[in-house]
Length: 232
Image (tube, rainbow, N blue to C red; front, side):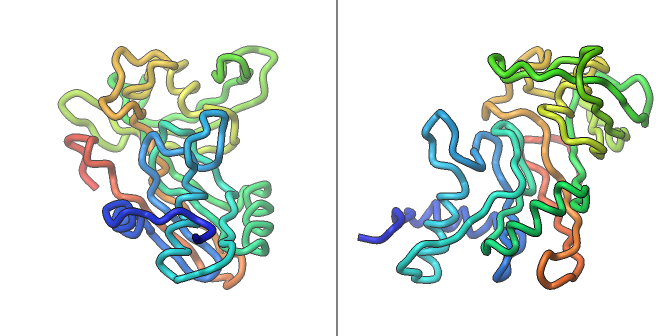
């Protein structure tokens, strides 16, 4: 009996197909809406454990597999997610995150046209732990982001978002406060849910200097198939 569970062939192939970049230090993965990155109170298996099982199976590793989580994405959000395959890479990635050296670009679909085609939003956010929700409030922590309208479909508007701060549910809260709740995001004012239970927010691209090799890393995730009418 191995340390990890054995993945069925279909799951094994699905995981393999969603690895966007991998070397001895990093694994960058295309997360689906609904998957959890790290264990939580639901008890559902997190991606960190699924990826350990995948690597053990693929590489025939008999012992423990290291899979550190420097970078979390909310459960309903999809897209680029970075894992560390060594403790050295994890330590350095954590430091890079604290210093703002990982540049992340997000895409969001909203049913409402934003007030301006491009703008920088600055709000103060307060997190309500019991509700797992953030609110704009005078006594909150400063949250800043820049959005740009980059595509329009028959029914939706695609915004590209750059974060300047990393607050809880920041994009979801700030866009909703602007009058543009994200498609499927019932918690922040969307009118209806998405069929997959996720929300139309994705981590589209990540750029940083490799923590060990010191080379440039620039990875983009494909747009989910459920985002109809959006061109890559």
